Length: 387
Image: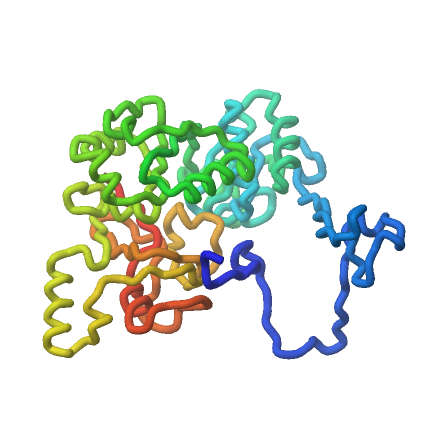
């Protein structure tokens, strides 16, 4: 009800196809849930749906589908364990290994190990850098996370340039995460992060107030996430001193993640956390819009800033040389975008995901005529800004 585009294949990253007719020789197969299949036929209505004691139809219970995982063949590696970054479970597995004190690394380049090619972003857990409990722990955690792990017995590549001993493999640090939860922060945005951390990844985090950011007391954290929030509230509550404290914390090695309205606050010139700016926020752009409105060169709609997008699907082009795109193999990705915070390209950082400047890029959903697509083109969805 709060977005205008909804696609399960897009949401879950499943390759799918559309057709105007039934496939030749195709047959529709309905899969009953386990409880319904076991229930006596008298308990089902004409549609086959289960009914409660009062006769009301009840939705079927979801099927319990196990995602395969574990060390392939139960082998014990002599050199390292490897797993690809393609699934959410891969990040979950990497976190839980690091959280338990195991040394985990990630490869910035494609590599070869165990007689096969591995993509960039592959997680590498070296046997020699961990104790003997690793063998049992990684198999158990991989099963819990639904990740298939390969055991390899040598660090040397036979045909490729890099093996598991290459210099492009970097060690991971244990994340100590703080998520801002305070006045001005969107409750649904905070709740979505809470659910993702707790249910999807099983990760620990600490809720903090804006006062903690303003006071600069962040020494115990190496990651701070600010969910979607009112930029004005952030500006008044954090202030110039707080922004400077955050900047010093990032320069000392911290990672600051801002989302939606929080990114609009970070992009303010007086905040200075990024060289990106919000479309329509600069005085030059406002002057150009005013001139266009007076001369009639552009429509009155074009003179305004971005109108809020009520949740639509767009394509973005990915920088597949950047670590934030580990696990993505295609040059484009379809994303759900909403709101009116359109970010101009960063002048000093990496523009990791960018809305194409030309060609069709809206997949589905409502957009504003002569506004959304025109102003969104060539802007950034995701920016990585070093300070």
